[in-house]
Length: 232
Image (cartoon, rainbow, N blue to C red; front, side, top):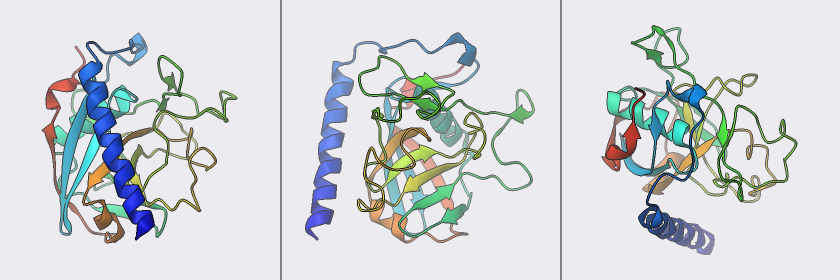
């Protein structure tokens, strides 16, 4: 019980810090490379509610650390893409994954191009002024560096991707079912390999209830939708 209280308090502190940081930002702190101008980006933070049979799970999406990953997620949520999709992977003490559309496709097919929209791996390292795009921290030779958003808490939200394609993420995402003994921040196999772009903040205990085949009823952006910028 004490450990759960500590996790809850840590999430509360993170939320307060995030709100204060958002108030202090007068303009987005870095430029996104032109090669990604065809992708939506999220220039701020948002609250997203995910309605399920077990209740409503609320998450904070952080575009300050991962604007392309957050932008892709918020854009798909606003399109209604996730509504009705199943949780396709559930592993005790590890992950809950969703976002795989029905049919042969593994991700979102952009109606404007007829092709799957993919986004680059995007990781902001503490002390850096902008994210690393397209490479894992191991590939960059900086495995000891700490991501700004680490896999450090139950309910960490990250983008899934094919094992052999760091830039192949499209629509599938996962929540970490954190156990400190198994995945200590900074020395686990996930930090620097996958893009974290948010955290569950309300009703996150329902992550323990999901089973393969359970569905997302609806996903709605309830705060911060104005921070989504579509490509021009």
